[in-house]
Structure formats: structure tokens, C-alpha cells
Image (cartoon, rainbow, N blue to C red):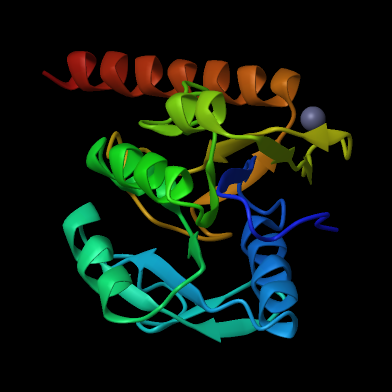
Length: 204
Ligand SMILES: [Zn+2]
């Protein structure tokens, strides 16, 4: 997969939920392991959906990780050992400080591989992801399968009514949808909200 390991570079794995991003990241970490490239593995500390100190893909593949909340914590961990690569899962949850860190690491010859959602549940570019995608040398954009029409899905549709951007979830809260089915779903939700509001007005 890799022609050269010695150069610093940024690689981004992106796509909607249920597209296998963590799986893809784990695959890359394993390839680095086989090549004896010492890799620091990171995930945001509030993402404890599957495990606190492991990245576990939906297929069950796992690898131990450091759970952190900031770029400074990553920087401190990186200093402790002679790491040659850094892998970050769910990178969209970090703030802009992580962009500076990732750039610094890549400039210093470190291979940085990150995975994260490109769009939020309303199909808006997610946080730092547009910057990361611009900075990256290589990008892998994955697709899921739309649960409605079974075409390629590039968006994560939120099934429950919550406006919290950082709401974590799994198949109960989200599903993969194509553009067209996502738009239809949001329209239906809006209609439901309007109906509820009107019903409330009638009661009042
Ligand atoms: Zn669809």
C-alpha cells in the first residue's frame, strides 16, 4: 500500500457513519505494525461507545489506544516514546489545535493517519475536517449503503430529534443514507415537528 514510510505525510480516511472508517484505520495501523513502525494510537476520550481504551470497529476488530481530550495531551504522549506514526480515530471531535499539531508532526517526518466524519447529520462540513482534507496528501473517501434505497450512502441521517452536534450514537440513533433519501427524511421530520406544534397550539 505504501511506497515509502520515511516521509512525513497526512492521510485522511473519511465518509459517513457505517462506512468502515475505523476498520480502514485499524487496517493501516496493522500494516505499520507489521513494518515495525511505532505508532501512537489516539481517540477522543468522551467516545466510550465501544470501549474506553480500545478502538473497536463494528466488525469487532480492535486495537489499544490512548483516550485524550486535547492536542496538548497528544503532544505529551508523542514525546514519551520514539513514535514514527500517529493514528487518530474520530478526529472530527478535536478542535483546531490538533490541525497545528498534525502539520508539525508531518513536517517532522511523521506519518499521520486520521479518520473522521466529513459531514454532520445535517450534511454540513464537520468542524476541522475541511481543513484536514485540504492539508492531506492522500484521502480515502468511503461510502456506506443507504438503508432506504440501497444505493451508495454518503451521509449520516439522525433518526432522533436532537440538535447536539456531538451526540454519539449507533444504529439506534443514526443510519446511512444517500443524498436524496437524506433530504426526504429531513423534510418528513420537519413536517412532523410542524404537526406537533400545531397540535399543541390547538390544545392551548
Ligand atoms: Zn437512498
